[in-house]
Length: 79
Image 1 (tube, rainbow, N blue to C red):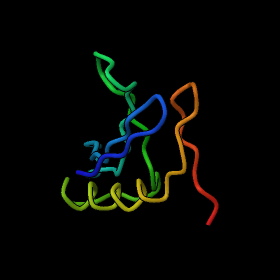
Image 2: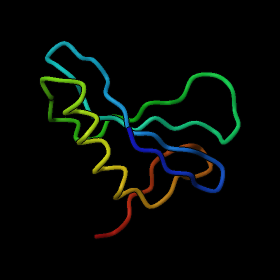
Image 3: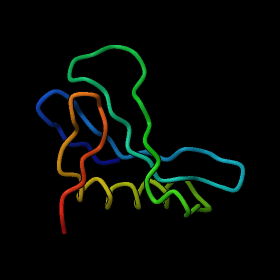
Image 4: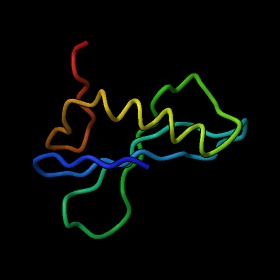
């Protein structure tokens, strides 16, 4: 699991269970906020056999994340 902080939010790599396996995701939550985070699936067309593999893919995606906007949406860095 990898974690990054932005101006108002923190983003954490995650794995989300689906019918066909696991999906890579990034969970976003306000800094210091209580409650559940919002999960954004990344690599939407790809599934993984294990939660570990999905989380590792999410970690790589998290490294490419440029920011989180005021609504908690992911803003990708131009590569």
